[in-house]
Length: 441
Ligand code: GDP
Image (cartoon, rainbow, N blue to C red; front, side, top):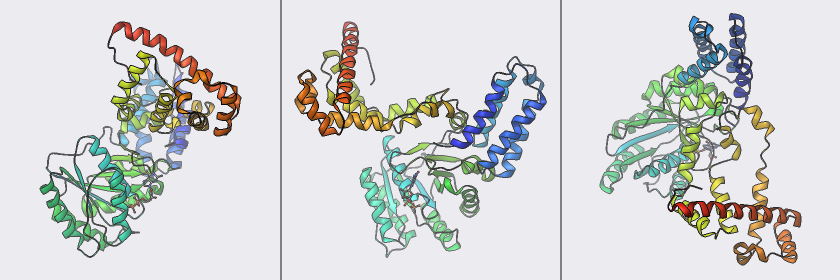
């Protein structure tokens, strides 16, 4: 989970303040010492930590906080606000005023640039844009192929001219191609290097001059911590980047890069990537992230996620099935798969308020249970899925064998399904009476 260790420590520290009816200067001092250590351990830039702690302390010791009825809560609120401010407070949007909007992707090798390019195309497509990807990494033939494979997965066209052409010329022609073909966004994937070097910067400067991009996004690997911050500074000095995409936050990145980049370089983090899959890219919301780190939940984020993944048509069909009482095991499987599309359950629960790291650990989520249920349903015949009442003991045995489970587990699922149908019957009756009431999932 993102910021797990930092979250643990900060939640511990602020937990001690929460219920306090009276907070002394010493309490604040102590809490801030702990906060400081936690941030340093998370690899946050030293200067950033120092100024953060100073600000929180000053605000916390103000008379309005100390004399309030809930000083503990006030201090927590200040920590949250300052944490959010550290990362830039509000989400920074991409400027689409130019048509086509040109987005130049840059970064070191392995940071996740090509993957992010495809993820971003997918995200923009969902916003009804018509992106074109341009393959300017001419040094590795495999890079063009990789971009083409990823692009086909998200069904976005690629403009490529092999490895013999000059990247600046390819970029320029790519933009022309977009204009001629009605693509309103051009995302240019450029070559990476192992280290920041002058030849790389010169090439990207050339592409920048030739294509006048609205956005220059630097892709950075969050796992590299303070190195990522240094890379950001170097790229910004050379190219005036407009934003950062921080990748691999699903790994055990301690969070230092996310918390330092904005303060050190003044460049906003615009997106974060939380996995290798092509749907694992999110707009970065500093305020929501601060809340998540402190275990305060991110309800807005959760709803947005659900909205992105819930298929309206399927939701309608489901509603109809509930009304007409024809819900089958196939529908059950479908629902389960839709839920899993939202991401690991743990991540989802982590977005609920009150679900701090400790509560999550007590609540062990068995992802295997999902797989087991799936296997049982998949071992049923078509008829059994629609008419589970025909499943007698010999069928149960066969299903158990086919799914590598036992009859007890098959019975358990059948019972659960029966209960679910009963509940739906009631729901269907209720909804049917009122005519068209909208229901999701
Ligand atoms: P590039 O050299 O910068 O173009 O990097 P690639 O896009 O080829 O990515 C390098 C590796 O990092 C690939 O194996 C990607 O699957 C992986 N990767 C990219 N983004 C993420 C992410 O957010 N999380 C994880 N876990 N892996 C990622």
